[in-house]
Length: 113
Length: 115
Image (cartoon, rainbow over all chains, first blue to last red; front, side, top):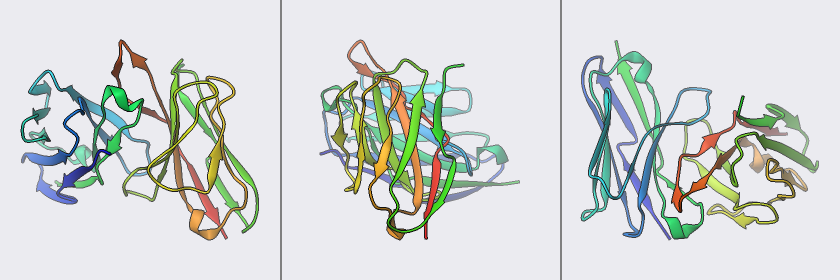
């Protein structure tokens, strides 16, 4: 089955700096890669996703890049703000897996004001 | 408003009790999932369903069972709760549109404590 590794497990940055979280996956058939943000005490929510037919997607201060050959994808947050502090999860899934997404272990991001 | 609802939000029970965690969604989604998550930790898939009368075990072995008699309802049952079941349980749903997967929408969670 699919295996997703996420690094780092914790990340601390100064406000205004950039943050990068990386994930690798094992199954080359995976074709959908979402990122979820979970604030303390709240439910995970999708912040951005990418499909295997594109290499990069951007939404304001966040962007995701995908390298299918190397089987890794990354989340980039620019101009970080304290409200970006949360746990971020990457995931990978593919159509024939009938609904299952495999999640990474999460990255706790702390943005210091 | 379309959403995912979980009840109860908090539950404290004694060892050996049978409990059912409720999950309902008004999203119109076919697929539903149950995850177990300790605070701030990884999400472990314990059960999922493609639709009515479909249930599958997830990656994490669980002593719980699920049922899917109605599209909008996906309850999780523990026949005999133990302290090792203490955790947060998150329900989620998603749609399969055009053969492609889309985001999962999560419920607010049930925080279970077994004494």
